[in-house]
Length: 216
Ligand code: G3P
Image 1 (cartoon, rainbow, N blue to C red):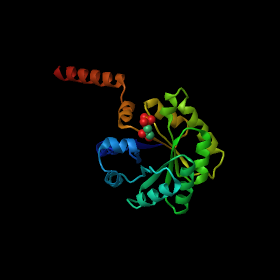
Image 2: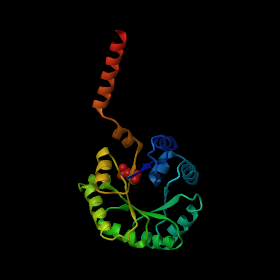
Image 3: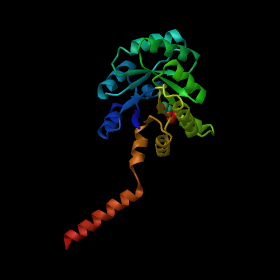
Image 4: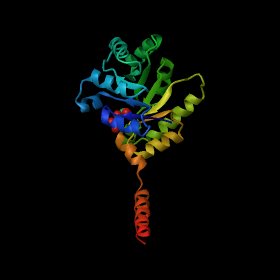
């Protein structure tokens, strides 16, 4: 399973790269705003850091506007992928951009039907938001399992499942169990994944014993 970093902060992306956990990067308007930097400069700087896909989100609400943004952003770097919210306009834009060999990711996916339509339209990736489903009392992981099973019935579907809105380590490990192609993970969750109190305790005990032994 590929690990993407869900961040627009170059320092976090560098830290994930050092761990070999930056197969790609996802951004969204909220993360770009939080970074306080210019959109194009931020995407270009990230696209320089990583060799994998860098997802940059279109903000137009009509198909023509999304297509215009997609064509423009695709010129910024070879690895920029156009992230498009799932809507009727978004599906139309994905089709047009696919015909121009511009790579897209359908985002804000909350149902299996949306995932099916995005694949039919020609999205290379879909981003189902699991944390936000958990927020409203639905099991986000159920959606990943269903999409995974559905896509597996059709070997000609090449759309990859990139699990988004990941909030905790369990979302990552259950995505792997469900057969997701990739997860996009905030750096905080990467840190949580590597930590265990018994590991810390074990390291402390070994080091204490080692020091005792060396004193003798
Ligand atoms: O990858 C999408 C992500 O940035 C949204 O996460 O936690 O705002 O639902 P969240």
